Length: 159
Image (cartoon, rainbow, N blue to C red; front, side, top):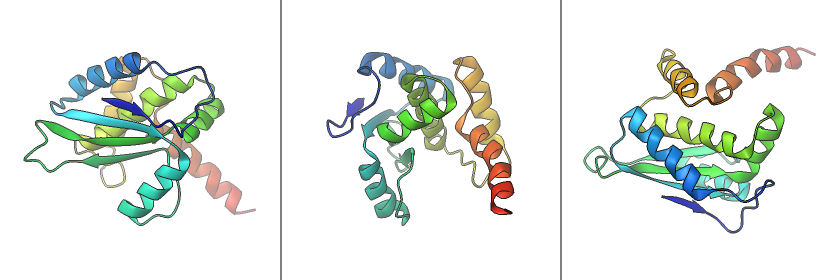
């Protein structure tokens, strides 16, 4: 189920909850997630609050994934929280629509709910995300962006 926080104001025309729900369900099926997933589209401020509460990081982010315990995952796989403000900025930065950015973020979050973690694996999540991004005809994945930006940050920090 997709919920849009009325406090969050996307910069594009209204989002199609039904189209995003269809994508969510197709992606869940492709990844092999049987349990339901709740998705909250909200503000930077709310993502910052959640990130601080659950991860101890006092900053906003684009997406947070909250998997459920394995014993209930067959019914409810977990929750995703996505910042509409950050998603809109990223969509603009990467030259695609907000709806495309939200699908990229949903896909990324679902992969985390399935147990993959790009911070601790040997590229398995990046490979799976690339395959699914191609299947769903999505622009550059989140993991690919981060690895492309890392050399730029190192170069910039040397100055």
